[in-house]
Image (cartoon, rainbow, N blue to C red; front, side, top):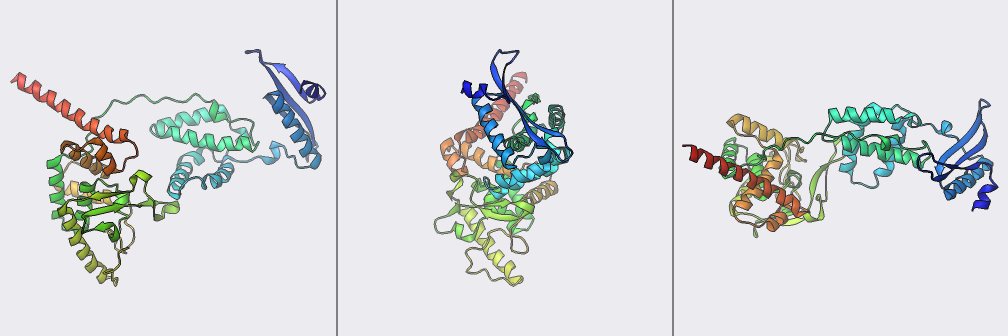
Length: 391
C-alpha cells in the first residue's frame, strides 16, 4: 500500500502536531466550474486505506463526469431534513413520526432550516443548543440528537465534511430539587372524585373515570376499547390496542405501546355493572343519531358525538372541569394510573403483579411508583412523630 501511495501525488502523508500520529490528506483537481474557477477536492485526517479509496472513487467520478463538488450540491438544512425524514419514516410508527415532525417544525427548522448545511458552524450550533436549553430544559437534548441524525446523514452524502453539532460542548441542566410525588389520589380522595364525577350526570364520563381508576389502564388504551374487549361473563377487559395520533393530527388505532402492554385484566363486579349501564345508555344515544349498534361488537366503548374517536385531550378537559366545579385537588390523567398502583400496593399486591396489571415493560417503572408512595408515607410518619413529641 505504501508503494501505491508513494506513486500518487494527490495523496500526502503528514504528522499531527499534538499526537505525532501519521495521517494522510487528499488534494485532487476536478476540472473547472461554470465560472472557470478550478474545482479542488480536499480531504484530510485520513488513514492510508481511506485516502486510496477516496482517490480511486473520485478519479472514476471525474473521468465519467459524475463528480459534482459540494458547491454544486449545496443544500439548506430543511432540504436535507426532507430527505432524511423519508428514510426515518420507514423505521418508526406514524405516531412517533408525527411527534418528531412536530419537534422539527416547531423548534428546529425555524432556527436552522434556511442555513446551508456546509455553512453551519460549531459556533452557530453551540448558540442554538444554549438557546434550546433555556427554552426547553427537559427536551433540548432530544433536539440536539435529531439535528445530529440529520447532519450525520448529510456527512454520508458528502454535503458537508463533518457534523458541527457533534463538536459542541453539551449544555448541562442543573439538577432540580426533587419535588414531592403527589400525582395520585389516596383512597378517600378517589372516592370523593368519583362521587362528584357521578353527580355531574354524565354516564359516559363517570364510567370512563371509574374504568381508568379501577383498571390502571392508559387513557390511550381505554379510548381504543371496543365492546368485544369487554367480557361480562368473566368480568375481564382485554387490552390489545391503543389510540394514537399520527400526521396532521390523524387519530388511529394501532398496537399497544409494548408487547407487555397486551394483557387481560380481571375487574371488580361493580365496575363491570357500570359498564353494562353505560352500554345501554350508549345504545340509546347512538339510536338518536340514526346508528343501531345493538349487535356491533366493534363499537367503541367510548366515542364522541359523531361516534368516532374521542380526542386524547378530552379526558383532561373533563378532569379539570370536575376538579374546578367541586374544588378538588387536581391530578393528571396519568395520575389515576399511579393511584391504581398505589392502592394495589397498600392492599398488599406484589410489585410483580402490579407490573403485569399495568403492562410495564420493566419492573423498575413499577418500583419507582412504589418508592415514591412509601417515601411520602415515611415523611408523614416522621412529621406525626415530631408533632406528637412537641405536644
